[in-house]
Length: 69
Image (cartoon, rainbow, N blue to C red; front, side):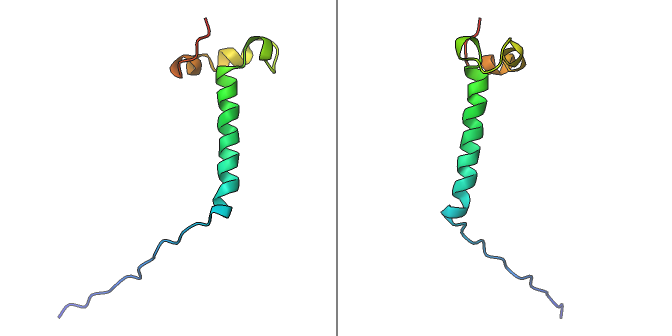
């Protein structure tokens, strides 16, 4: 007779919203900051002088459908 060994079963536990919320807010702020630099950082509302940021994210602008020319 063959002996079988059973492995312990782990049950996933729910993560409380109060632990997820700060990370969700942080991620949302990073997303908004990224969209700002890709979509708006050019011209009168520019935070940085020159076109360095615009040139760095230029291909991303076209990929996301933002006009720039």
